[in-house]
Image 1 (spheres, helix red, strand yellow):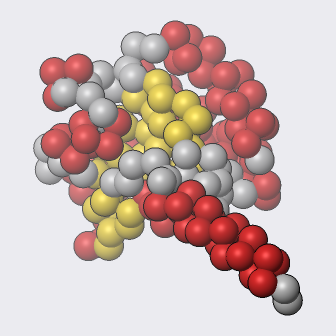
Image 2: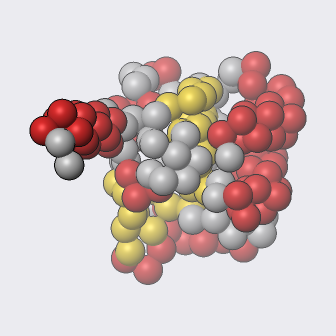
Length: 165
């Protein structure tokens, strides 16, 4: 390899490294059974992270929509995660997944961590709220609770995911 080629390869590698470090925000999510995951683990796949409350009627409508879209696009790599803001969340999350037939990971995190993740103050947090990431971890959609995105959530999410997979 020529010196010029080596310099170009090093520059390309540095650019890739910077891209990975510049990925969107990450959130540590507690899962049932004492497990944890970090949303940064999803880099490499387009994904949706939804903040919800188990007793919220809008959330009870939203997460099954995400389940449907996730199943339709799973073969193309799309993933989803739900993060609850409930008090005493583990039994509520387990029951929610069972009652609404949610197969993607559901967990919980503190309000403070969630608000940092979605860049809102606690008094601005309404659910459901969603962030959609491309496979590099870059935020491609940020929908706070009450956003018009949720008026036609399935069509809007499908269109967005089709662009990302």
